[in-house]
Amino acid sequence: MLPKPLLIATFNINGTNARLPRLVEWLEAAKPDIACLQEIKMMTENFPVEVLREAGYHCLVQGQKGFNGVAILSREPATEVQRGLPGDETDEQSRYLEADVMGVRVASIYLPNGNPQPGPKFDYKLAWMERLRVHALGLLQTGLPVVLAGDYNVVPNDDDIWDPGALAGDALMQPGSRAAWRQLLWQGWTDAVRQLHPIGGIWSFWDYQAGAWPRDHGFRIDHLLLSPAAADRLQDAGVMKDVRGMEKASDHAPAFCVLR
Image (cartoon, rainbow, N blue to C red):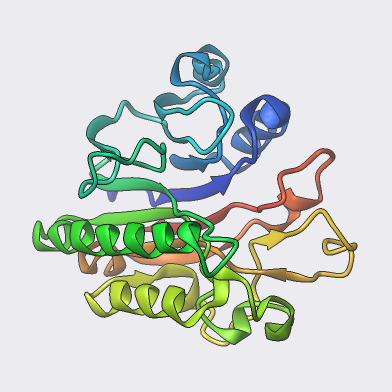
């Protein structure tokens, strides 16, 4: 008997305390095997491990008080591999967690926003992306099936947003951000959603402001990058758009891939 396909999702939850009922509802409905969360916005020790265990999930968590924070939820126990992105020992922001789980190496990534740009926040974003590029190259060289899943805060192409002019001055669409994204892809990573939806027009984020959700004024910044060993198993990918329409929803919807 062949093993069942593996559903891996990435979801910027925008505050665990504010969204916990929505998170549990989504887990029960979508039943991802692995869920990478970003912006949990709480200390590691405060993460609702017991609630999520009752929902059927093991938890690895890298928290931070009030900001950032990432987690990996999984149907089977995960083995932590890397906590924090290597390359800068002074970086105290909780934005990277990597684990081996269910036969796959998975990372939950919350890449810096970078606004306002230009400025130190944008410089930090580009430096962080360079550190990610270096680390990702090492992951490729392992030959493992690897999924780098998260909120990358990069709109890769003009057809990944409802109106390219709307964010022309934003850090998410600057040439430097997009160049750093392309450098990642050129290593040999596959953008799972783009691979199966090559003409764009799929969003994963809709702002709370200006009626963005009802007007479908969104853009795609939540991505799953697959190593060749993972990309060879790609069966499906997309965005669970309906989650954004739930009451008191996150401003993101989960992006996902299915691996054979």
